[in-house]
Image (cartoon, rainbow, N blue to C red; front, side):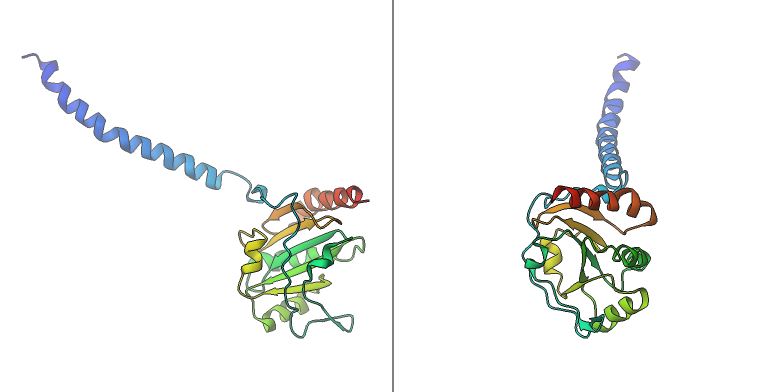
Length: 197
């Protein structure tokens, strides 16, 4: 019997053992590349082009702005106004970073900023807004997270732009940052203000 004939079966067996491992590693690498290789703020939303969820949310107890109680979220608030909807929580570290940017953005009276307070305690939420300023004319409390599911929220913070017709036109996953507030968010706001006239 030749030497080649006796070596073939063990080599073939090794190939059969190694091949599934190679295929698994290739698939795992592809999965990790897709998971971590892109910009998380570019995660598509199935809600773009659809009406904003019609979920009413209660007001944040004890929250006052300009001497008046801040109302909760009534879905009718979207009609006729360009709206920024920010899903936030006091326990969310990136929310602390974006808060001053939202407060500055809130000075522009051409649109309204609506907050959805996600799974937070009222005391902590009020302290958070007291610390950074309250950019929100409306704050709805999503104590159990159901409304955020309807909005398609992956995690806080997330920001949505709703046109005057009540349709979601843009979604920003992750915090508003000094980089994206001018290059992305304000650009999308201007588009929405022009498109809805």
